[in-house]
Every structure is written in C-alpha cells, then in structure tokens.
Image (cartoon, rainbow, N blue to C red; front, top):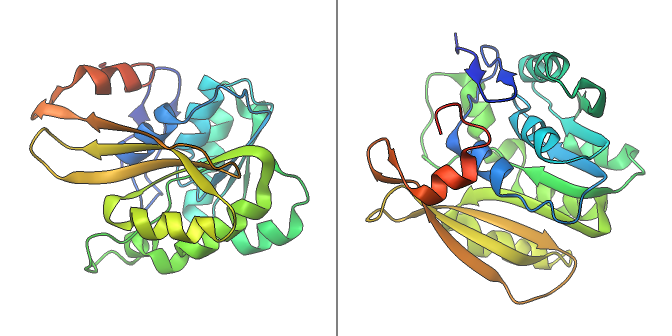
Length: 237
C-alpha cells in the first residue's frame, strides 16, 4: 500500500496507482511556465492527478482536465481531485488519448504530460507498474500528435522525458510544427549525468532558453535551486 503523500495544500492518495509520486511530476508541475495565465489545462496520463493539482494551486485556470486510462489510477485521480480545494475546476476522463483527441472539439492553452517511459529496459514482476512504465502504452509519436491537435494556437505543451530521448522527441515534435522554446536539464547531483529533460513546446519557433538544475549536493542535501522550485509544494522545503 502506498502511503498518502502530503503536500502543503493538498494530499495525494496513491495506494491504487502503479506509478507513485516521483520527483519527475513535482519538477514538471513546479517548472511549467504559467506567465500566459492559461484558462484551460490538459494533463495527459494523469496517474494520481498530482500535476493537475499542482497547476490548480499555481494558476487561476477555470478548466483543468485530465485523462487516465488505467481503471485504478482513474478512480484514485478522481478521489484526489474531489478531496482537494479545487474540485470544481478539476475533471478526469476515463479514456484513451486516441478517443479523447477524436471526440474533444475544444483546444487547451496548456497541455502537460509526464508520459510513461520505460527507461530501465527490464520488466519487473509487477504487471501494472510495467504497463505504467512501458512506452508502448502511449508512444511519444502518439502523444505529440495528439498534443498538436488539442493545443490552442498560442498554447504551450510541456513534458518531462529521459534526457536520452530529447533529440528524437524534438524531431518528432517538429513534424507537427511544435518547437522547443524552453529546456531544463536535470542532474541528480553535481557529478551525475543529465537524467531528465523538461521541454516546453509551442507552435512558435524561437531561440531555445536552456538551463540546468541539480537536485542534491549530497544525499538529502538539496540545492537552493531545487528548494526554490519546489518549496510551495513539499512540506519540508
């Protein structure tokens, strides 16, 4: 059983979800630019709903929709939404991205995703977790294509992916006229390799703003940059 994860302004129950709260979602939820004051937000592959809840805390968006295909995760997401202060702005659809993209006419100002990826190249004994981790569930092409159809003309699409996928992900996005405007490279510590890429795309080509974030100086000693980014959420920051 996964214990509830307490943030400053909301609680995430995660006992039914294959993918527990990880640093990735929190990094993305805290980093995403909201300077354009999005009216509508879409969270693709919501899991526990943590990204949607972080954006409900950070923005005045009146419409925050989430999509989750896994039965247990969907129920958990709905439950987490209902127990938060922002239940009236949050809605989770129990559907596939494909069906959702075909049926929804509206466009979103901000689309976010911490897509399932299978970086470790092995299968565990836990089938549900494997499904959540395995990119076959939602290949990057499918994610990018759908995002391009669901994004408003001036909207932004933000993701977190393994650094080793960055070049191919950006190439795929360019085929549907989505271009990177902002990239954050994340390292676990000073000497480790870059592990994650957070990328913000739009239909506008521009010079790419690149930055780097190091999470720890040593075990459980967080850098000031990481504290500044996440302190509105983590209880102990």
